[in-house]
Image (tube, rainbow, N blue to C red; front, top):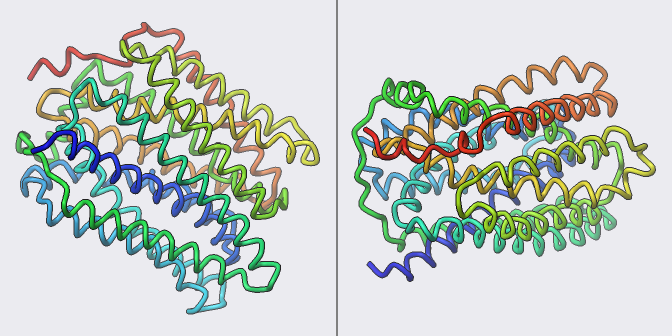
Amino acid sequence: MNYKKEYRKYLISAILDTANNKIASNALITAFAIYLGIPNFWIGLYVVLDTITNVIQIFAAPIFSRIGQSKKVVLINYSIYRIASVSFAFIPLLSQDINIRTILFFIPAIIYAITGELGYITFVNWRMSLLKNEDRGKFSSTKNAFKNTIIVLFSFLMGILLDNFKANGNELGGFSILFFIVFVIATIDIILRIFTYKPEIKQEKVNLKESISKPIKDKSFKKILFFCGLYRFAIGIGMIYLNVYILRYLNVNYLYYSILNMIISLSEAVFGLYWAKKITNRNWKKILIPMSILYIASFILLLILKENILIYILPIIYILLGCGHSAYDLYDNIAIYENSLNGYETSYVTFERFIEGIVTAFIPILTGTLLVNNGDNSIKLTFLISLISFIIILIFISSNSSNFLNHKHNRNNK
């Protein structure tokens, strides 16, 4: 096995995968859902659906520990995942009824979310097993930099294309072209993974009980679970209707919407490289305290500014959000795995995702009661809840010892 060659393959696959995830599950699909006429609540549910279905990952550890994380099974699952991401494009051809469209929208959405969760942990485990410890931070930051460059180009194309097609009365034509591009990227990604080396995974056979009991009995891991769960709630409720608010209530055009997505992607790319240099000694407080402050500032601006002013300040807000996203993304990609008990990495990572899913599942229930009038004031209430949650996160991180977010000694004990 040529390490450098396989490193490059894993890097390219990770870039294509995360770029497609960002494109297909955020800007494009949300805009398409608004085009379909789907109500705010259901669009919000879709936005957090992939996090809610994290609960399924609790079954991934026992399943894949028994089938040896079969490359064939994993790639079949991944192919279904990618096919589902472009199936949305056929909905306008099947019905004009909003209720039927909503049902048709959620069929591929659920398949996409479930297969994505089942396959997530295996690719993480393969990648982390292949990569040398000293290469992990570089890999994550490089992946984010290239991923966000692709998103910048795609977002710019999306804005121009959709605005032009909309002006000509053929908005669906613009979306169809974009879905085709997503399909091409996915096809290249799948073919590359077929010819990529799968590391030998030495993993304990675990059952569902072990997948829960091992991490939950680890006392030092409980604070990490609390922090991650609280973060997912805070960012989930804050972002759940942000795109709806911008497109439906601020009435921005597709080009400006695309520029905002370009800005947040560039911000993630630039600050991802910056944060990677700050955590070489794994002192995560150096990036998580600033992250919390950035989110607090973002949601304060969203709350206090009037719409005629806010529309011009959105680029600044998106820079702050991108910087915050990149800080947590680095922690999420490295720290949780490194905090796992040796031999039970899959169980730890999937249990953390399980907790995220449980927490996020409460968000649509909560917002369902908030959106009684289905208006922009209700959406601003979600910004307020997010603001309060990030203040709690800031206090929690600041008041705990500097090493609670990273307990390396766990990996030396069985």
